[in-house]
Every structure is written in structure tokens, then in C-alpha cells.
Length: 206
Image (cartoon, rainbow, N blue to C red; front, side, top):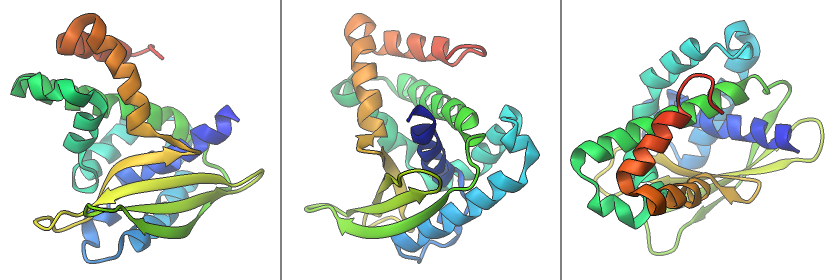
């Protein structure tokens, strides 16, 4: 079960790293997710370095493609919760950088699990009272399909859809981290959370 969820998480994070979201700004969110999934799965299957978990290669890919594709400020703000308002600009920058590094490490470890999977977009649902939609997909391969949903947003002043959260088998990624972050904030405030993330992101840490 862990490996299955890890594979689904890979495809979710892979979408964050894809260039298609930035390039096809006029496309519908479901079409973007469909194309992203195809591109990333094909790339993962064909690249021995990615299959081997080459962190430098993965980091280079994500660094070049991630910013146009995901709203990291929204993701980090949501994961930190109400205490985000008390964080200084410098602390917010550090939190975003460390959260990105954390996701990169998850991505690097999980990407090697992509083998014969494919993704089918099943439904796109508007989020009431907002500019957001949830694109529902299924990861299909050996075993039971895994639900993988993307929360996406395109405010009136934005030119492209961006991913702001991912749901893997019923668990929203940002919400899951929010619970973990809340524990660290309770113990040591924003600086305590930053310290914990820096420590967690050190090479060799899990």
C-alpha cells in the first residue's frame, strides 16, 4: 500500500514539475493534467537517471519548471496555517524554500516507483464560491486504481491555471503537512518550524 501511495504521490508531484502547465495557459485544467501526466510518465520511464533517483537531475528539472506550474506561496501559506500572518517576509521566503525542498525530496524518492502506470482524468468539479476546480483522476496499473485529485486555481487576474493542492487516495497533501507543521509551531513558533524543516531537509534525513 505504501508503494502504491508513493507512486501516486510521484505523479502528483510530477505534475508540479511539468512545463506543460506554463506553456498551454489557454487550455482547460483537465486537459492540462492529462497532458502533464502523459509527458511525465513517459519521461520517467525513459530516463535511467530519474529511475535511479538522481537528485541533481530531478532538482534541475523542478527548478526550471516548477515556478510557472504551481503556486508555492499559496501551498506554503495553507500548510503553515494562521501563523503565516505573523511570519516576517524573510521567514516566509525561508518557509517556501524549505517546503519546496521537502517536496523535491519526496519527489526524488518516489519517482523511481513509476513503472507501468497511466492516469485517466475522470471528472472536473468547480469549488463553490471560488475560482478553483478539482480535477479528479485515477492512477491505473497493476492492482486497484488510486484516486488522485488536483485542486487548481486561476483567479481573474491570472493567466494560467496553477496547482495549489493534491489529494492522494483521500489525503490532501497540504492539509497533511499542515498538521505536522502545527506541531512544530506549537513547540517553537515559526522559527521552530523553519529549524525543523532545515533539519529534515539535510542529506540523509528521512
